[in-house]
View (cartoon, one colour):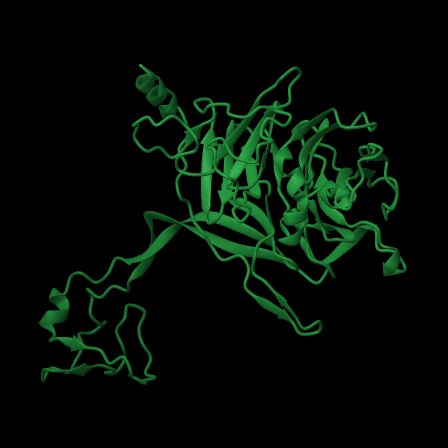
Length: 439
């Protein structure tokens, strides 16, 4: 009965098939700064589709590219000269590919003169040339292939590494952010951008925080938010001034007295922010927690989710091996009732954020993600609903081991994940593999 129920539910899951791949960036070298620029892609953002083509923005540390991925029909050479009887009647024709004859040719392929060499004694062509000779034609076949073409390259606008790109809801502009500046671009103009946020002080010794992430509001094209290394989120309105050096709202959690330590500011640094689909909430991820903010209430987060509280006693070790500086992403479901983020040992956590929800699920990004050992046919997707809810919100995982009793591996980490905007499916990138989960 369980097998039938599981098989029935899995059959309704969407299937994901390989589509295409292409090289977005190549290694570069900045000769002015003697700096190697890796080809590693930092962010990818989908743009609005048009005419059946897919458009996306991708960026490495310095250069942003605008790509068009389109399905094209494969062209083949067809309509060749299949009837050779006319040519055979006049002797086998052997055309020299290295002929340099400049004698004029007729429209139907015959020549005034004899540019050909013949193996027979008959060296004359019929009047008007060979009537059965047809030139090959290039035509479309029923086969199709996907082709990626770089439409624009946006370069030389950032002195520091780009950490974020975000599309505007107007479909015409996007932002790119590095540690100290946020630039506004028009998709059609690649040689000019406008600096809208600049936190660089006159004296770099006075620098107290850097920009860690930036995101456009999903529906209001004049609003955007950016986070900082001190755990704050600023909401800005581009209508206020050309340089948005002041914010319209500031979201930050007040520090609890007596809890400050050497690691307080490090773990408070926000690595990623995401707007909910309706723009009402902002989800942020710092090293230890997920926080959900209401844009209409800047006094504090409306919900806080402990991701891996068991690591708090090990912060010193994590600082020594630089793991404390890992940047985990976060995401919200399209309906806004769940949030997710990654952790170590290729684990990721899913929390329910609707009113009164206590849902807190921990899953491993692997081919057998902590589920009952049931012999079922291999499928391209896994179900969240069929997996045991092994951990609960608020520190139930303080033992420092995973649900299988194994110690966590800090060298394997799940940094990147994304929720489908309309379906309840989740994509997780672990090592060199991509895992799809469906609930």
